[in-house]
Structures are given as structure tokens and as C-alpha cells.
Amino acid sequence: MSDRPHDLLPRLLALAPEDGGLCPGESVIVAFSGGPDSAVLLDLLHRTGNALDPPLRLIAAHFDHGLRDDSADDAVACARFCAERGLSFRTHRAGPLDPSRSGGIEAAARAARYEWLESVRVAEQADSIATGHHFDDHIETLLMWMFRGTGSRGMTGIAARRDHLMRPLRSFRRDQIEAYADWRGLPTQTDTTNQDDRFLRNRIRQRLIPTLREIFDGDPTDRLAGFARRVAIDGQLVEDLAHEALEQCSLELTPTSRRIHRKSWMGLSNPLQLHALRLIVGPWAQLHHDQMWNEEALLRVLGFMESGQPGKRMPLPGGGWLYVHGHEFEFCSIEVQAELQHRVTEQLLPPSDVGVTLVSARSACFDADRVDLPVTLRLLAPGDRIRPHGMAGQKKVSDLLRERDIPSQRRASTMVVEDAGRIIWVVGITTSDETQITNTTQRVLKLALEPISEV
Image 1 (cartoon, rainbow, N blue to C red):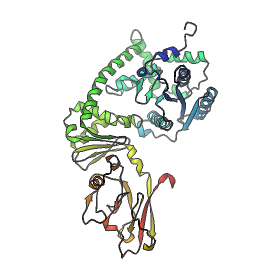
Image 2: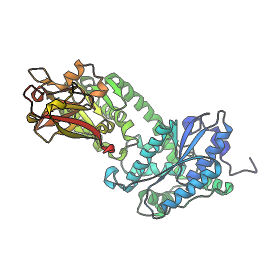
Image 3: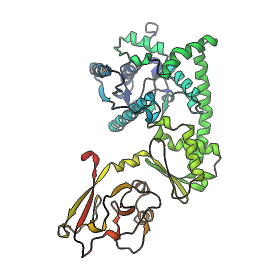
Image 4: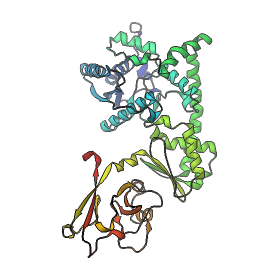
């Protein structure tokens, strides 16, 4: 080690997985901007992979935010870096970023980057996403969140590992990373936005931390890191209690929804409700619109749950819905709404051209003169009713789905078609008796669903 003072590999290999260390055989998507931090991360993981048995599987992923005129050059340099080392490489250029979507251009860029990285992880069936966040980033983030008025979870800064995200460099300082890059002769790209005073993180790095070092003896960043560790220990206890309380209230959990027993939930104390709500929305908020899920938003949702009446629903920050049913609450994430990426096509036919099948999974036939055009496609809402084909009276669609043994995870994504405020078709299930084809039908209206992406 004496002749290799800048080599960070021994320290990285000694890290436990919970501290950002690697597991043998782990498959990792490496966020690779081309800057010093991500170049060092990729180089270290490449070397680490060869030192483990079985070795790591690495895929470098470059996301071009499009915030600089010369950003496309970074993608070219990153591709060359990976080709020279025989590393798999993926790249993507962002479309226009909406600053209002996540609370500013920085947050919008971050949300878009993590959404794409997660899509690559899923497509590649990888275990983790590794980013180049280091000790200095950890402290800057902690300060940024503190002055935003964050709760206890935000006071822990950047986690070394959480869910699918890992930060192997979190215990390394910026000057150590830069020294390693020089020692290895790594080609790196300079992101001029890192010096742009318009961005809050840059002002914290360039102004606040140097001021803290002038005011306090020693290195205040070490004390802040110790503070974050102690908060994380206390926070874990609170999170365990919230998990236990949520488990007692939960009726069903799917990738896109969660049902909560209403009476059990209302029996929890307000602090437990707040922490349990963070757990409910956490998987959806972490990689999508997390800046929208601030304390104000959480309290607004809790207020709705406190006063909501059965049949009411509330849109959730960033997408999705909270439904109030008679004895339960139901959270449906934004992914449920993906089902609505369809359009309804209309076709008029003579009765002689209609086959035996009048209702299928994606089409249905009606008496054209008994339908008021245009029709509207939407998701099922609490309290929706239809007069099913062959029945004399109306019936709740939710009851109809239960009777037909439709799994609850599919009910939230059930689509309905309505005309003039009445439901005429529960897609894939039944049509309205009021619009059925009879012996006197002169014209048949065939409605069909087509994905918008294929139009």
C-alpha cells in the first residue's frame, strides 16, 4: 500500500454491503456521466468485479440531460471510455424537462435521470443502480435538506444503500477521488454546470461549507456525518414501528396499489400515521416526483383520509389516486393510469356484418341509435354503476367485478366507456343492457381499444 497511496480499491473491497460494498456476482447499472466521480466509480467497480468470485456484471448508463450545448460530446467520450475497457454501455438523451413537475430544473433533471436508470435496471434484470455520490455530496445533501425543513429521514443525508440504489463512494472524499483519477490517468469530462451559482448545491459547496469551516474548529463535515449516523439509528427504530403498524392495517399490497383497513388506520396515533404514509408512498415517490412528496403533501393526504367520505377520491402528488371505500382506503400508483394510453375507435356496420361475438377483451358492439356519441374512456371510479347486459336494474361495477372473481389488483385498472354520463361498456366484462343489439337494430356501432403508441 505504501507505493499506492491513492488506490481506493482496498478500502472499497473492505466495505460491507450496507456501507456501499459489493456482493460477488452482483449485476450493477453504473450511472456514468463521464465526470471524475462517475469515472472513478466505474473504474473501481471494473477492478472490483475482477477481484470477486463470481465477478460483477456491469453496465454503464449515460443520461444526457441536454442542459448544455456540448452535452452530446460527453456521451461520445463515455462510449469511448467503455469501449476501451470492454464495458457494456447504454445512453439516452432527455426530452424537454418540465421544472414544475418536480420543483425546479435540478429536481426535474434528477427525476428524469433516475426514471431512465430504473428502466435500464428492469430491462437488464440487474440487481442495483450505482451512483458516484461521495462523502462531500452526502454532506451537501444533508445541509440542503436541513434548510428545507426536512424530517428525520432527510437528516440522514444520502444512504449508502437503499432498495435498488447504492453509493459505493459515499465514504470517500472528493479530494481522494480526484487523486485516484489522476493516479489512474482516467479521462474525465468537465460539467460546467457544477460551477453555476444558480444551483443551490453549488452555492452550498462554494459558500456555506467554507464558511462553516471558518466558524468551527476542526472539520464540521465530520460532525455532520456523525449527526446523520445517529439520526439514522433513531430513524430505523421509528421506521420499524411504522412498518409494524402498517402491517396491522394492510389488507392487500400489489406493485401498483395498497388497500388499508380504514378503522385500523384511524386507530393509529398521528405521528405513526405520518410515518406509515411515508412507507406507503415511498416506493412510488423514490424514483418519481419525490420532491412533490413533502410534509405539506403528506399532511394534505392525511387530512383527506381523516375527513374523506366513501366514494370520494383524491389525486396524489405526481400521479395516482387515493380512494375512500366503505371500510378501506385504496392507494393506486401512477402506473395504474398507464392503462389509459389507449383510444376508442368507432366503426358503423350493418347488422349482417356482425359476428356471434359481441363483446371481447378489447371490442364491443352496440345498437348505434341507442348510443350518444362521442364516448369517453376512463378508469373505473368508486360508485360507478351499469345496467349489465341481460339485467333489469343497475349494479355497482365493483360488485360485478367481485362476483366475476376479478383479482383486486386488476380492479383499479379497469376501464369503462361512457356516453352522456352513463357507462355503456365495462371493458372486457360487459356492455349496458340499454344499448344492446336487438332484432330491430338498423346500425351497429363497434367500439374497439387501440394503444395510442400504435396509432
